[in-house]
Image (tube, rainbow over all chains, first blue to last red; front, side, top):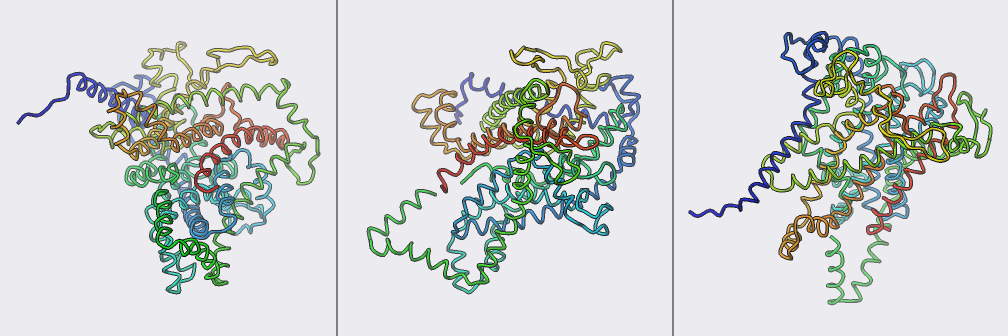
Length: 294
Length: 343
């Protein structure tokens, strides 16, 4: 059979497109690949032979050292203690607001959405000093935290609170756009059947929002996990800190050992990379839900 | 969506104009009365609690910062602040302080640079949209750095790329010998400088900040690419076909047809670029703030948390400057976003 072939110029163009994209992709992987490679080698060896040399020894010693010296068991616990409750609260609260704003006409709908969206874009450095004072002024029993100051400052609860307050802005924005696409008749039908607002929320709207919630959960997980600023500003140095900011401690103590730091970085990025690679579809739809204002 | 909304009332109007006119109004009023008291309380809680939390922990502090910028205070004890009017702003903008303009300039460089990166990201997205085999793989690779925290990105690059003795840059350049090494993170030497008439210190781009820019590009390009690629996928293909039939070349059809259709995404990309440039903090702070890499975010934080009580007033006025810069773009974004839809 006769198959029409693309003209020569077009084929050449396509070939160079592949060459370009592949070159860029390889370049993109260089820092990560280099970090993986360095993390398995003793520092003395790469110092002597350079990072491109053939390995004489491959060892997991850097990982062991990074884990123990960086206090990573504790740091991971701290991270989970902050991320999981924050995530649940953020998704729960923002769906509640989005539900109210998108399903019922109410005078302050637009104002509320404006305030939320704008708040989420504010630079955190600008709000932290008054926040610091507020947390210092809010009493909090010591037996519910690891501090002994009697207030919220320096506790992980404070970090959770600010994460929730900050991130509900973005999630409400995304979810309200999503909920607007659910036909109003569904809610009205439930109303006629005698379901109250609360039941409507839990049994009609929330189940339909599952894709959006999954997308937001993946996205927010990495954002909360990667948070550096609030942990550094609100928590004391050392054992209190979650995993991402704990690398700052390591960098200070072992300033010269680049391979140890590479190993620590690898440990830290494993959870987010795993979530990203496993749930890539959700991840990207979360971003685009935020960008594609309906 | 909008076409359906327009078409429906028209069609009912032709059949029975009176009913069509009255129905929506009645329906809206009735929906309110259908809510029981319990329902109304539930809705108030649904919207009220999160709103109160958000306002209390985001907007109240933002406004307090604005108020504190007119005071002198060490931040130790509430109520000990002293009102000093615009004095803090005076010291921010005059030469005495000497930190503000270099930091602002770095933010500006970052903004220009990240805008360039956004263009590259858009190019990547455009190329990946061309029916490439293995798009998903390319996409994953380019997007991977985005899921890493900028602080960790800083450390990875510090150990692998910038390290004077074994880093890739120096190895490739053959500058690993003792005394010949380039200290990528530590070198505050300026690449270029220029004098501004009313400033004592010349402004310029230091070498280590330029090195940091490369790492930030690594992360920013993938972010923009994914946002744009999703947008491109939703562009109606018949638009491009029409452009091709009309004799547009590749660039013309992108510039005249695709780019205008992508306006909502363009707005988001622009805002993300600006806000990222203005909020920059993590990577610089994680690398222990090497000299020459000051940005506004760092300046605000350092003035607020000093040893033995910070200069809260001065730090707050830096913060207000940063806030106002951000707000200009935030408001522009909101106006763009809500004009057609709600307002």
